Figure 1 (tube, rainbow, N blue to C red):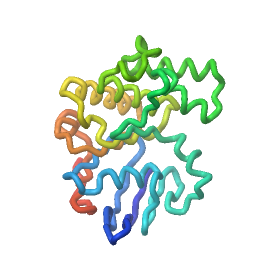
Figure 2: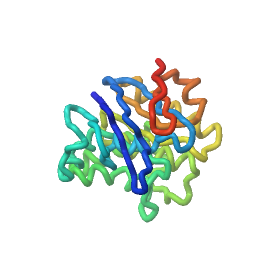
Figure 3: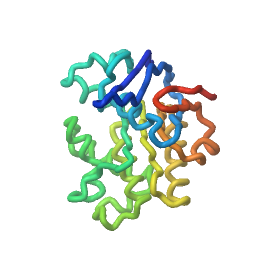
Length: 220
């Protein structure tokens, strides 16, 4: 499903965030990208999500080379992705269910079907009873669960998450972890950039270890 070959990303001032990285991720795999702060985890996440383009090398997702993809084609590619960001990127001028409805409005799903899917997604993350809630009334853990509901509402085959438990308490983080486990069990390819050791110890994923932009090894 995903194949990277000699993937590199250089930023201005000659900063090499990713250096000659190669790996394969198969359909339905659970893969964690680990490493210290500054190792290149977020850059690799952004390359996988087609948010940024590589400087050199190739990255093939579902048969399409993201390095050569036209900008107009990226929104269509992303329909197979669910993206969970560190900062959540929620819209605080909209309530919970309106945040989840937004991706389906973008793709033009009929209103009745969109509402059904949005409520189902909120139910999966334990927020159905908060569908009309103002986001400022949600805890940090609830906001992250809402971000996950929005990420999966279009039924993506690939779920990408960048440090999804950053700044959460232990109980909230454990709840997020179990939600991800459930999605993986129904066949979603799960790719998580994290430095949180509990993710590795509790889920036993395959691990890509990054250090200064290079893969040190792959476990699992």
